[in-house]
Length: 427
Image 1 (cartoon, rainbow, N blue to C red):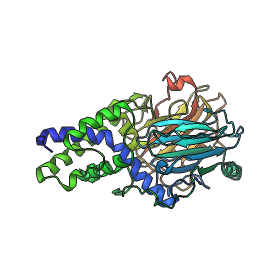
Image 2 (cartoon, rainbow, N blue to C red):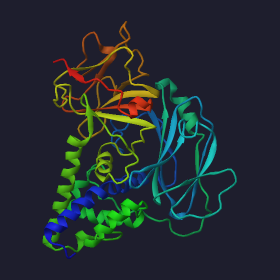
Image 3 (tube, rainbow, N blue to C red):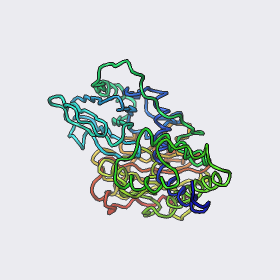
Image 4 (cartoon, rainbow, N blue to C red):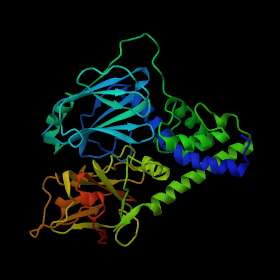
Protein backbone atom coordinates (compact mmCIF):
# COMPACT_ATOMS: atom_id res chain seq x y z
CA UNK A 1 0.00 0.00 0.00
CA UNK A 2 1.57 3.28 -1.13
CA UNK A 3 -1.37 5.67 -0.66
CA UNK A 4 -1.36 8.37 2.01
CA UNK A 5 -3.42 7.65 5.11
CA UNK A 6 -6.14 10.05 3.95
CA UNK A 7 -6.13 8.57 0.46
CA UNK A 8 -6.28 5.04 1.83
CA UNK A 9 -9.23 5.95 4.06
CA UNK A 10 -11.11 7.46 1.09
CA UNK A 11 -10.63 4.37 -1.06
CA UNK A 12 -11.37 2.06 1.86
CA UNK A 13 -14.68 3.86 2.53
CA UNK A 14 -15.71 3.38 -1.10
CA UNK A 15 -14.62 -0.26 -0.99
CA UNK A 16 -16.59 -0.82 2.21
CA UNK A 17 -19.80 0.50 0.65
CA UNK A 18 -19.18 -1.51 -2.50
CA UNK A 19 -18.11 -4.74 -0.82
CA UNK A 20 -20.31 -4.93 2.28
CA UNK A 21 -23.17 -6.71 0.44
CA UNK A 22 -20.70 -9.38 -0.71
CA UNK A 23 -19.34 -9.85 2.82
CA UNK A 24 -22.87 -10.02 4.25
CA UNK A 25 -23.77 -12.61 1.62
CA UNK A 26 -20.74 -14.76 2.35
CA UNK A 27 -21.45 -14.61 6.07
CA UNK A 28 -25.03 -15.63 5.32
CA UNK A 29 -23.70 -18.43 3.13
CA UNK A 30 -21.63 -19.74 6.03
CA UNK A 31 -24.67 -19.74 8.31
CA UNK A 32 -26.82 -21.52 5.72
CA UNK A 33 -24.08 -24.07 5.05
CA UNK A 34 -23.88 -24.89 8.76
CA UNK A 35 -27.66 -25.09 9.12
CA UNK A 36 -28.74 -26.78 5.89
CA UNK A 37 -25.64 -27.83 3.96
CA UNK A 38 -24.63 -26.81 0.42
CA UNK A 39 -26.63 -27.53 -2.74
CA UNK A 40 -29.46 -28.87 -0.63
CA UNK A 41 -32.98 -27.46 -0.76
CA UNK A 42 -34.29 -26.79 2.72
CA UNK A 43 -38.05 -26.30 3.08
CA UNK A 44 -39.24 -24.54 6.20
CA UNK A 45 -42.10 -26.31 7.95
CA UNK A 46 -43.23 -23.39 10.09
CA UNK A 47 -43.70 -19.69 9.47
CA UNK A 48 -41.04 -17.32 10.80
CA UNK A 49 -41.17 -16.23 14.44
CA UNK A 50 -38.84 -14.37 16.85
CA UNK A 51 -36.46 -17.34 16.92
CA UNK A 52 -35.87 -16.98 13.15
CA UNK A 53 -32.62 -15.01 12.96
CA UNK A 54 -30.67 -16.11 9.90
CA UNK A 55 -31.86 -13.50 7.39
CA UNK A 56 -32.83 -10.00 8.53
CA UNK A 57 -36.50 -8.91 8.30
CA UNK A 58 -38.10 -12.32 7.70
CA UNK A 59 -41.71 -12.30 6.56
CA UNK A 60 -44.50 -14.24 8.27
CA UNK A 61 -46.62 -14.69 5.16
CA UNK A 62 -44.74 -17.42 3.35
CA UNK A 63 -42.85 -20.59 3.99
CA UNK A 64 -39.27 -20.21 2.82
CA UNK A 65 -37.60 -22.74 0.56
CA UNK A 66 -33.89 -22.00 0.70
CA UNK A 67 -30.70 -23.36 -0.82
CA UNK A 68 -27.12 -22.19 -0.78
CA UNK A 69 -25.81 -23.00 -4.25
CA UNK A 70 -22.10 -23.55 -4.91
CA UNK A 71 -21.56 -24.11 -8.63
CA UNK A 72 -17.79 -24.49 -8.48
CA UNK A 73 -18.24 -28.23 -9.02
CA UNK A 74 -20.72 -27.77 -11.86
CA UNK A 75 -24.39 -27.11 -12.69
CA UNK A 76 -27.47 -28.02 -10.68
CA UNK A 77 -30.97 -28.87 -11.83
CA UNK A 78 -34.09 -27.42 -10.18
CA UNK A 79 -37.32 -29.26 -11.00
CA UNK A 80 -40.64 -27.61 -10.18
CA UNK A 81 -44.18 -28.96 -10.66
CA UNK A 82 -47.05 -26.93 -12.05
CA UNK A 83 -48.28 -24.62 -9.26
CA UNK A 84 -51.34 -22.60 -10.20
CA UNK A 85 -53.41 -22.46 -7.02
CA UNK A 86 -50.87 -20.78 -4.73
CA UNK A 87 -48.57 -17.77 -5.09
CA UNK A 88 -44.90 -18.72 -5.07
CA UNK A 89 -41.58 -17.57 -6.41
CA UNK A 90 -37.98 -18.73 -6.50
CA UNK A 91 -35.53 -15.86 -6.56
CA UNK A 92 -31.95 -16.39 -7.70
CA UNK A 93 -29.74 -13.99 -5.73
CA UNK A 94 -26.05 -13.67 -6.53
CA UNK A 95 -23.31 -12.99 -3.99
CA UNK A 96 -23.59 -9.24 -4.61
CA UNK A 97 -27.35 -9.37 -3.80
CA UNK A 98 -28.46 -8.88 -7.40
CA UNK A 99 -31.71 -10.78 -8.12
CA UNK A 100 -30.91 -12.00 -11.61
CA UNK A 101 -33.55 -14.67 -12.37
CA UNK A 102 -36.98 -15.87 -11.22
CA UNK A 103 -39.23 -18.92 -11.39
CA UNK A 104 -42.80 -18.70 -10.13
CA UNK A 105 -46.31 -17.34 -10.41
CA UNK A 106 -45.24 -14.16 -12.18
CA UNK A 107 -42.05 -15.12 -13.99
CA UNK A 108 -43.02 -18.53 -15.39
CA UNK A 109 -46.83 -18.42 -14.91
CA UNK A 110 -46.59 -21.33 -12.48
CA UNK A 111 -45.63 -23.77 -15.25
CA UNK A 112 -43.84 -27.05 -14.56
CA UNK A 113 -40.28 -27.43 -15.77
CA UNK A 114 -36.62 -28.13 -15.10
CA UNK A 115 -34.07 -25.36 -14.88
CA UNK A 116 -30.35 -25.97 -15.32
CA UNK A 117 -28.41 -23.54 -13.11
CA UNK A 118 -24.92 -23.05 -14.56
CA UNK A 119 -21.85 -21.16 -13.26
CA UNK A 120 -20.29 -18.16 -15.01
CA UNK A 121 -18.56 -19.12 -18.25
CA UNK A 122 -20.12 -22.59 -18.45
CA UNK A 123 -20.49 -23.96 -22.01
CA UNK A 124 -21.61 -27.57 -21.58
CA UNK A 125 -24.54 -29.44 -23.07
CA UNK A 126 -28.04 -28.56 -21.89
CA UNK A 127 -30.35 -31.58 -21.42
CA UNK A 128 -33.31 -31.62 -23.79
CA UNK A 129 -36.26 -29.65 -22.44
CA UNK A 130 -34.33 -27.87 -19.70
CA UNK A 131 -34.34 -24.10 -19.31
CA UNK A 132 -31.03 -22.45 -18.44
CA UNK A 133 -30.32 -20.05 -15.58
CA UNK A 134 -26.87 -18.49 -15.98
CA UNK A 135 -25.50 -17.50 -12.60
CA UNK A 136 -23.48 -14.31 -12.26
CA UNK A 137 -21.39 -15.65 -9.33
CA UNK A 138 -20.28 -19.21 -8.47
CA UNK A 139 -21.84 -18.97 -5.00
CA UNK A 140 -25.45 -17.81 -4.94
CA UNK A 141 -28.74 -18.23 -3.14
CA UNK A 142 -32.04 -19.79 -4.12
CA UNK A 143 -34.77 -18.07 -2.10
CA UNK A 144 -38.24 -19.55 -2.45
CA UNK A 145 -41.43 -18.14 -0.95
CA UNK A 146 -44.74 -20.04 -0.83
CA UNK A 147 -47.81 -18.17 0.37
CA UNK A 148 -49.62 -19.61 3.40
CA UNK A 149 -53.17 -18.60 4.32
CA UNK A 150 -53.15 -19.36 8.03
CA UNK A 151 -52.15 -22.36 10.12
CA UNK A 152 -54.75 -24.64 8.52
CA UNK A 153 -53.07 -24.09 5.15
CA UNK A 154 -49.62 -25.19 6.30
CA UNK A 155 -49.97 -28.90 5.40
CA UNK A 156 -51.04 -28.07 1.83
CA UNK A 157 -48.19 -25.59 1.42
CA UNK A 158 -45.66 -28.12 2.70
CA UNK A 159 -46.96 -30.74 0.29
CA UNK A 160 -46.44 -28.43 -2.68
CA UNK A 161 -42.94 -27.49 -1.58
CA UNK A 162 -42.00 -31.16 -1.19
CA UNK A 163 -42.53 -31.64 -4.93
CA UNK A 164 -39.68 -29.26 -5.80
CA UNK A 165 -36.30 -30.96 -6.23
CA UNK A 166 -32.70 -29.80 -6.53
CA UNK A 167 -30.08 -32.18 -7.87
CA UNK A 168 -26.52 -32.12 -9.15
CA UNK A 169 -25.86 -32.71 -12.82
CA UNK A 170 -22.38 -34.01 -12.01
CA UNK A 171 -21.24 -37.50 -11.11
CA UNK A 172 -19.06 -37.91 -8.02
CA UNK A 173 -15.39 -37.20 -8.77
CA UNK A 174 -13.86 -38.01 -5.41
CA UNK A 175 -12.23 -34.57 -5.24
CA UNK A 176 -12.68 -32.48 -2.09
CA UNK A 177 -15.71 -30.20 -2.07
CA UNK A 178 -14.72 -26.51 -2.28
CA UNK A 179 -15.00 -24.70 1.02
CA UNK A 180 -16.37 -21.26 1.83
CA UNK A 181 -14.27 -18.60 3.57
CA UNK A 182 -14.68 -18.45 7.33
CA UNK A 183 -17.20 -15.96 8.67
CA UNK A 184 -16.15 -13.27 11.12
CA UNK A 185 -19.72 -12.28 11.93
CA UNK A 186 -20.28 -10.90 15.40
CA UNK A 187 -23.99 -11.52 15.85
CA UNK A 188 -26.00 -11.22 12.64
CA UNK A 189 -24.23 -11.17 9.23
CA UNK A 190 -25.22 -7.49 8.89
CA UNK A 191 -22.85 -6.42 11.68
CA UNK A 192 -20.10 -5.69 9.17
CA UNK A 193 -18.89 -2.41 10.77
CA UNK A 194 -17.77 -4.32 13.86
CA UNK A 195 -15.00 -6.01 11.86
CA UNK A 196 -12.98 -2.81 11.55
CA UNK A 197 -9.91 -3.14 9.32
CA UNK A 198 -10.38 -6.94 9.27
CA UNK A 199 -13.39 -6.32 7.01
CA UNK A 200 -10.98 -6.10 4.09
CA UNK A 201 -9.57 -9.55 4.83
CA UNK A 202 -13.10 -10.93 4.69
CA UNK A 203 -13.68 -9.04 1.47
CA UNK A 204 -10.52 -10.51 -0.05
CA UNK A 205 -11.62 -14.05 0.83
CA UNK A 206 -15.11 -13.43 -0.55
CA UNK A 207 -13.73 -12.01 -3.81
CA UNK A 208 -11.55 -15.09 -4.24
CA UNK A 209 -14.71 -17.21 -4.31
CA UNK A 210 -17.10 -14.87 -6.14
CA UNK A 211 -15.34 -12.23 -8.26
CA UNK A 212 -17.63 -9.63 -9.83
CA UNK A 213 -19.07 -10.19 -13.29
CA UNK A 214 -20.69 -6.86 -14.16
CA UNK A 215 -18.65 -4.11 -15.86
CA UNK A 216 -19.52 -1.56 -13.16
CA UNK A 217 -18.41 -3.86 -10.36
CA UNK A 218 -15.22 -4.79 -12.19
CA UNK A 219 -14.38 -1.13 -12.75
CA UNK A 220 -14.88 -0.41 -9.04
CA UNK A 221 -12.68 -3.32 -8.03
CA UNK A 222 -9.95 -2.16 -10.42
CA UNK A 223 -9.82 1.12 -8.50
CA UNK A 224 -9.68 -0.62 -5.14
CA UNK A 225 -6.84 -2.79 -6.41
CA UNK A 226 -4.62 0.30 -6.46
CA UNK A 227 -4.40 0.07 -2.66
CA UNK A 228 -4.24 -3.71 -2.54
CA UNK A 229 -7.92 -4.61 -2.14
CA UNK A 230 -8.74 -7.65 -4.24
CA UNK A 231 -9.27 -11.43 -4.40
CA UNK A 232 -7.28 -13.22 -1.69
CA UNK A 233 -5.89 -9.97 -0.26
CA UNK A 234 -5.45 -9.76 3.52
CA UNK A 235 -4.69 -6.11 4.13
CA UNK A 236 -5.39 -6.21 7.84
CA UNK A 237 -2.77 -8.90 8.44
CA UNK A 238 0.07 -6.94 6.84
CA UNK A 239 -0.77 -3.27 7.32
CA UNK A 240 1.26 -0.91 9.48
CA UNK A 241 -0.37 0.72 12.48
CA UNK A 242 -1.04 3.86 10.45
CA UNK A 243 -2.47 1.89 7.52
CA UNK A 244 -4.66 -0.26 9.76
CA UNK A 245 -6.03 2.88 11.41
CA UNK A 246 -6.76 4.34 7.96
CA UNK A 247 -8.59 1.17 6.91
CA UNK A 248 -10.63 1.18 10.12
CA UNK A 249 -11.57 4.82 9.51
CA UNK A 250 -12.65 3.82 6.01
CA UNK A 251 -15.08 1.32 7.51
CA UNK A 252 -16.47 3.95 9.88
CA UNK A 253 -16.85 6.51 7.09
CA UNK A 254 -18.38 3.98 4.71
CA UNK A 255 -20.91 2.88 7.31
CA UNK A 256 -21.76 6.51 8.05
CA UNK A 257 -22.61 6.93 4.36
CA UNK A 258 -24.89 3.91 4.48
CA UNK A 259 -26.65 5.19 7.61
CA UNK A 260 -27.04 8.67 6.09
CA UNK A 261 -28.48 7.14 2.94
CA UNK A 262 -30.98 5.13 4.96
CA UNK A 263 -31.99 8.23 6.90
CA UNK A 264 -32.13 10.86 4.18
CA UNK A 265 -31.74 9.59 0.61
CA UNK A 266 -34.58 7.12 0.18
CA UNK A 267 -37.77 8.39 -1.46
CA UNK A 268 -40.22 8.92 1.41
CA UNK A 269 -43.93 9.78 1.40
CA UNK A 270 -46.05 9.95 4.58
CA UNK A 271 -43.20 8.41 6.54
CA UNK A 272 -42.89 5.42 4.20
CA UNK A 273 -39.60 4.81 2.44
CA UNK A 274 -39.69 3.11 -0.93
CA UNK A 275 -36.63 1.91 -2.82
CA UNK A 276 -37.35 2.02 -6.57
CA UNK A 277 -35.02 -0.66 -7.91
CA UNK A 278 -34.32 -3.37 -5.37
CA UNK A 279 -32.52 -6.42 -6.66
CA UNK A 280 -31.21 -4.65 -9.76
CA UNK A 281 -28.81 -1.96 -8.60
CA UNK A 282 -26.57 -1.20 -11.57
CA UNK A 283 -23.93 1.15 -10.19
CA UNK A 284 -25.92 2.34 -7.17
CA UNK A 285 -23.60 0.81 -4.59
CA UNK A 286 -25.01 2.82 -1.67
CA UNK A 287 -28.52 1.54 -2.29
CA UNK A 288 -27.20 -2.01 -2.60
CA UNK A 289 -25.34 -1.71 0.70
CA UNK A 290 -28.33 -0.17 2.49
CA UNK A 291 -30.67 -2.91 1.30
CA UNK A 292 -28.19 -5.67 2.22
CA UNK A 293 -28.10 -4.34 5.78
CA UNK A 294 -31.86 -3.97 6.19
CA UNK A 295 -33.76 -6.30 3.83
CA UNK A 296 -31.13 -8.68 2.44
CA UNK A 297 -32.59 -10.86 -0.30
CA UNK A 298 -35.26 -8.36 -1.33
CA UNK A 299 -37.17 -9.06 -4.54
CA UNK A 300 -37.30 -6.88 -7.63
CA UNK A 301 -40.29 -4.46 -7.63
CA UNK A 302 -42.24 -6.50 -10.19
CA UNK A 303 -42.29 -9.34 -7.66
CA UNK A 304 -42.67 -7.37 -4.45
CA UNK A 305 -42.44 -3.83 -3.16
CA UNK A 306 -41.22 -3.18 0.37
CA UNK A 307 -42.14 0.07 2.09
CA UNK A 308 -40.25 0.76 5.30
CA UNK A 309 -41.34 3.19 8.00
CA UNK A 310 -39.36 4.43 10.99
CA UNK A 311 -41.39 7.56 11.77
CA UNK A 312 -45.02 8.35 12.49
CA UNK A 313 -47.05 11.06 10.79
CA UNK A 314 -45.51 13.69 13.08
CA UNK A 315 -41.97 12.70 12.12
CA UNK A 316 -41.23 11.01 15.45
CA UNK A 317 -39.58 7.61 15.84
CA UNK A 318 -41.91 4.74 16.69
CA UNK A 319 -41.96 3.64 20.30
CA UNK A 320 -44.06 1.21 22.29
CA UNK A 321 -44.86 4.03 24.71
CA UNK A 322 -47.49 5.23 22.23
CA UNK A 323 -50.44 3.70 20.38
CA UNK A 324 -50.80 4.33 16.65
CA UNK A 325 -53.39 3.84 13.94
CA UNK A 326 -52.91 3.19 10.24
CA UNK A 327 -56.10 4.19 8.45
CA UNK A 328 -56.87 2.93 4.96
CA UNK A 329 -59.83 4.75 3.43
CA UNK A 330 -62.38 2.74 1.46
CA UNK A 331 -60.85 1.55 -1.80
CA UNK A 332 -57.29 2.44 -0.76
CA UNK A 333 -55.97 -0.86 0.57
CA UNK A 334 -52.58 -1.84 -0.89
CA UNK A 335 -53.23 -2.96 -4.51
CA UNK A 336 -51.73 -6.45 -4.81
CA UNK A 337 -52.35 -9.29 -7.22
CA UNK A 338 -50.93 -11.76 -4.69
CA UNK A 339 -51.04 -10.39 -1.11
CA UNK A 340 -50.06 -7.55 1.24
CA UNK A 341 -49.00 -7.50 4.87
CA UNK A 342 -47.70 -5.11 7.51
CA UNK A 343 -44.96 -6.49 9.80
CA UNK A 344 -43.35 -5.12 12.98
CA UNK A 345 -39.62 -5.52 13.66
CA UNK A 346 -37.41 -4.63 16.59
CA UNK A 347 -34.43 -2.27 16.21
CA UNK A 348 -32.23 -5.19 15.09
CA UNK A 349 -34.54 -6.00 12.18
CA UNK A 350 -36.01 -9.19 13.64
CA UNK A 351 -39.42 -10.18 15.00
CA UNK A 352 -40.16 -9.52 18.67
CA UNK A 353 -42.18 -11.87 20.87
CA UNK A 354 -45.63 -10.71 21.96
CA UNK A 355 -48.48 -12.15 23.99
CA UNK A 356 -50.75 -13.12 21.07
CA UNK A 357 -47.92 -14.23 18.72
CA UNK A 358 -49.11 -11.90 15.99
CA UNK A 359 -46.28 -10.30 14.04
CA UNK A 360 -48.12 -9.05 10.95
CA UNK A 361 -51.55 -7.99 9.75
CA UNK A 362 -52.62 -8.32 6.13
CA UNK A 363 -55.26 -9.34 3.66
CA UNK A 364 -55.41 -12.88 5.07
CA UNK A 365 -55.59 -12.02 8.78
CA UNK A 366 -58.59 -13.90 10.22
CA UNK A 367 -61.22 -11.82 12.00
CA UNK A 368 -59.94 -8.47 10.74
CA UNK A 369 -62.78 -5.93 11.04
CA UNK A 370 -63.49 -3.60 8.14
CA UNK A 371 -65.74 -0.58 8.79
CA UNK A 372 -69.15 -0.41 7.14
CA UNK A 373 -67.89 2.17 4.68
CA UNK A 374 -65.09 -0.19 3.58
CA UNK A 375 -62.25 1.54 5.44
CA UNK A 376 -59.74 -0.36 7.58
CA UNK A 377 -57.95 0.74 10.75
CA UNK A 378 -54.90 -1.13 12.03
CA UNK A 379 -53.95 -0.36 15.63
CA UNK A 380 -50.32 -0.61 16.70
CA UNK A 381 -49.44 -0.60 20.37
CA UNK A 382 -47.70 -2.52 23.12
CA UNK A 383 -51.00 -3.06 24.92
CA UNK A 384 -54.28 -4.17 23.31
CA UNK A 385 -56.50 -1.23 22.25
CA UNK A 386 -59.86 -1.51 23.98
CA UNK A 387 -62.56 -2.43 21.50
CA UNK A 388 -60.12 -2.89 18.60
CA UNK A 389 -58.35 -6.11 19.56
CA UNK A 390 -59.23 -7.81 16.25
CA UNK A 391 -57.22 -5.18 14.38
CA UNK A 392 -54.34 -4.99 16.87
CA UNK A 393 -50.75 -5.42 15.76
CA UNK A 394 -48.57 -5.67 18.90
CA UNK A 395 -45.33 -3.70 19.02
CA UNK A 396 -42.31 -3.91 21.36
CA UNK A 397 -42.08 -1.78 24.48
CA UNK A 398 -39.18 0.14 22.95
CA UNK A 399 -38.38 1.27 19.42
CA UNK A 400 -39.57 -0.57 16.33
CA UNK A 401 -39.85 -0.31 12.56
CA UNK A 402 -42.56 -1.31 10.08
CA UNK A 403 -42.35 -2.98 6.68
CA UNK A 404 -45.35 -3.09 4.35
CA UNK A 405 -45.00 -5.82 1.73
CA UNK A 406 -47.03 -5.79 -1.46
CA UNK A 407 -46.51 -8.92 -3.56
CA UNK A 408 -47.22 -8.76 -7.29
CA UNK A 409 -48.03 -5.06 -6.90
CA UNK A 410 -50.07 -3.05 -9.34
CA UNK A 411 -48.15 -0.55 -11.43
CA UNK A 412 -49.38 2.29 -9.20
CA UNK A 413 -47.30 0.84 -6.37
CA UNK A 414 -44.18 0.39 -8.47
CA UNK A 415 -44.24 3.90 -9.95
CA UNK A 416 -45.14 5.54 -6.63
CA UNK A 417 -48.61 6.73 -7.65
CA UNK A 418 -50.14 4.73 -4.81
CA UNK A 419 -49.46 6.43 -1.47
CA UNK A 420 -49.57 4.57 1.83
CA UNK A 421 -51.18 6.78 4.51
CA UNK A 422 -49.13 7.99 7.46
CA UNK A 423 -49.23 6.09 10.74
CA UNK A 424 -50.71 8.47 13.28
CA UNK A 425 -50.09 8.47 17.04
CA UNK A 426 -53.14 8.20 19.30
CA UNK A 427 -51.38 8.71 22.60
